[in-house]
Image (cartoon, rainbow, N blue to C red):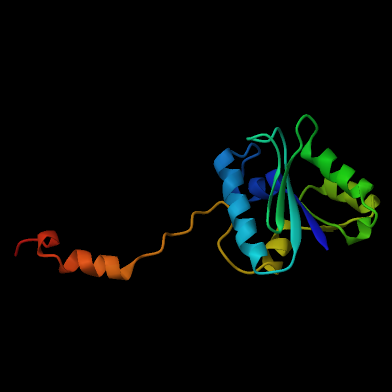
Amino acid sequence: MPYLLDGNNLIGRERGSSRPSDEDREGLVRELCERLRRTRARAVVFFDGPAPRGGGSSLGSLTLRYAGKVSADAAMLEEISKSRAPREIVLVTADRELGRRAREAGASVLGPEEFWSRFGTGRAPGKETPSRVDVDEWMRYFEDERNRQPK
């Protein structure tokens, strides 16, 4: 069952921004890749505007698509209408109008919260993951006399 993801809408719901930055998009893509890696699900995330470096790309089970001169909503609806089996497509968005139009075209619609819960718990998209601590490195640092405070 392929998922079509309304990328800007997912970011907007999390960050409260209608115009996501490249950093916001990269964070969403990292989070999606991490979560999809644990499953056999396939997804296509759509973003408004031109592709940053010459086109969409495939990252394993996640494909990136940029709508270019049309809206991402229009690109997702076109994808549904071109499908031989639109009933197998699940559109993930919180946009009511887009959801209504996708249902009329035969797709299922899923809200972002349910989508995230289906694909495991983890950090919310757009939030930074704390870096891993290398305990051995810290131990070596504190064992070195030069790194100790004088008593």
